[in-house]
Length: 383
Image (cartoon, rainbow, N blue to C red; front, top):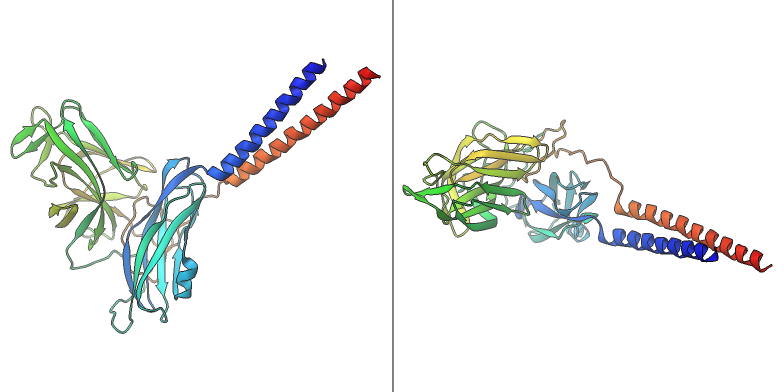
């Protein structure tokens, strides 16, 4: 009987050790990882003015949990007369918001580095933005009072720069699947899909899926949509509506696109420019696209059969309506920033660790009680 109690004692002691180690592990390692995607990599403002742009904190790996976005060097920027505010700093990735940067009239002209980083249970690597502060005397930058964020308009050449690219030699007999930006954008080529190039059906061809940042892109015609990122298909390094994806009989064979984005995100088809050395310049909007939204975080298109560009857009958030989108967008300066309601705060991993420690304490108490009982029983037998 004494041996039986001893076995129970050692089993409970082992359980306590395991729980404590698990608590330490969960506290140290967190839950997953995220990525901070900024709509702009560079912005310019004059002394005494401000500018705003979209950002997205998206889940890259692991399980979504509470994550806090902040500016790592905010104190140094503040001492230089520059402040950064975020409409949503906490949430479960993927979530988005609007960042507003203000430069006081005393901020010295020059370049500043603004470092964004998410911390918590889904931490990210730093994402940098270069801020250029211009002299108020030489700058023509101004902020027009507005209750909504309005899209950037410019007479400069529309430019799309590659963010990420995935390429694969495709054999029409087997098809292929490619993704970029940690799976945020995915293209699936079904078996039996050929590339029709200069009137010839190519069974083996190089297919590329490319995501782009954008600049000098206005809203689509007769809309107030906010343009964000873009993506494209390419065949043998070419992005051109003269190429088509077809089946063996020559009929159109669309490529299926899967995109992780908010329920209000859509796109417009864009072509007419030139693609060279990772940059697409020129072109214009052609028509609005139709997407399926099977759930609140995924959009699917099953009709694209040419290697052209598609520009993502989201509705301009109003000052009285909560808005959430999953694709970053490029916006102009604003005077009023919409506050995006944060997600309900989930229990953090530190809370989970607390529960584990409490459980460990309970197990330790049971171990002690068992040890005392065992010792008492042994004395009774001796007596």
